[in-house]
Length: 266
Ligand code: ACO
Picture 1 (cartoon, helix red, strand yellow):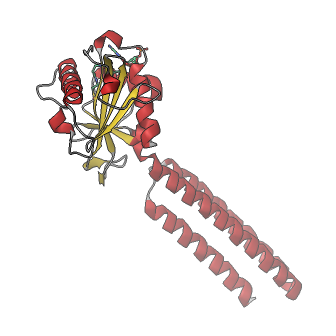
Picture 2 (cartoon, helix red, strand yellow):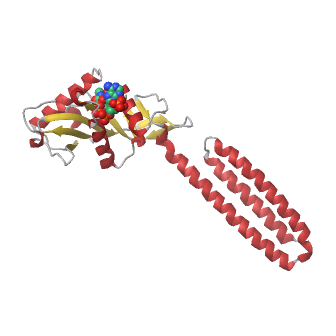
Picture 3 (cartoon, protein in one colour):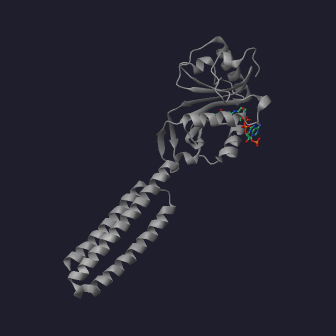
């Protein structure tokens, strides 16, 4: 989009040719013109009845606007802002989340599919220290869906009752947590086994005559552990459930407690 002034005269442009504006940015008439004209072009390109980006819809908000320019040309805009959303997660549970959302994204028709959108998007990811799957996308157009699939391999999302698209990977953090808990649980079990082996050795020294009984008991315990482990593997394939952790912990504590009680008795 051609203007009759250098865009760097009305806004600060960084070394990548990108301007980053906050809603509390000081206004000037030329900057208002840039925002108005790009906002209108974006709405037109997306067939929207209402403007998403205009000076009144941007200034005095907590939104951010990324603008790509070159001399007197404005090449594209990207507007983001945090929203409070009620979304279904992978298990179908409704969660209240406050993601940063891509609210408006537009590259001028004359320069589309030349990497300008990627430049704007990457600059925003760097500045906000975000990964694309951690953003929500308001009413993404087919072009934006194609863009996200091409560059970031994002395609699977959970249909919501609002206009926002949240990719499945958004909820990956929860999976990571569960995986970490599982691994902590495994090391806890390992620790318990070592303690058990030590107890067994002590017991062996103190009561050599009970060796056979202890052997049998150890075999039985290891059989039970194997069964529990295979059950654990089966459950791992299911969607994670917080109570699983507690169950495994209780199960192993009970098993270990029983065993050490038996050893004590002997
Ligand atoms: N048809 C299909 N896919 C497209 C198109 C198109 N016309 N234009 C861009 N893409 C996707 C494709 O994946 C394309 O890769 P390809 O050319 O290998 O097929 C990729 O984007 C190109 O990447 P860039 O060149 O970096 O993207 P560009 O500079 O074109 O910017 C953008 C992408 C912003 C979506 C731009 O095409 C645009 O402004 N489109 C019109 C407005 C729009 O739909 N905006 C998104 C609205 S939704 C929202 O804002 C939340």
